Image (cartoon, rainbow, N blue to C red; front, side, top):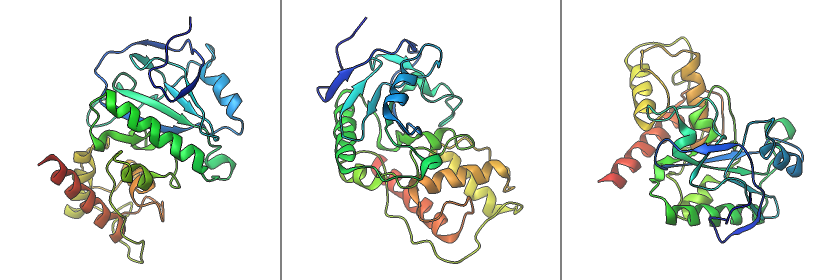
Length: 252
């Protein structure tokens, strides 16, 4: 049966049957794109019992906000995922699907009306839940081998300027090999340790393997999007250092 929207910004409630009780307290906000050409088709899928997927919110391209699952319930948006040692991301997070066709359909820009609506919705959610800045994440952050959303053209800077999420100005992408698949040694180990400490699902081994490349690419999509290739070039390493320092300063 219908429910009362959690946010005053919601313009429509479309109840999805795909939810259940949470198993942990909310401490994450996870952002996605729908990855489908039609927003209405995406909404139908999120509300379909056969699809077994859902999110708490969907933000249309015109800025209209639809709620599908009450925030108190566990929606099915993260899939197989991990962050900071936790694997039940659905129980810990609120999921926002942002209508955008995504990588498979040309990476169109997010319209200004939609950006403003997402900023407003995120700020509203953060008034109700104690979610630390570094736990406002992309789907690709928690599932780097499977997911690319919400994409390297996403508006993380605008969110950070509104007090949402942790972000630092990325160092410009410049020539320089850095670290790449097949490399091994202390520099690779230090990179892996830094990414793992930030929260990425990566076991430090000292060998730059395929999983390391996936995680580096996910980091680039979120924090150094000028070139997403999974290679830990000097600008990626410098941006990671700045981000780590910013989190430490915020925590102190």
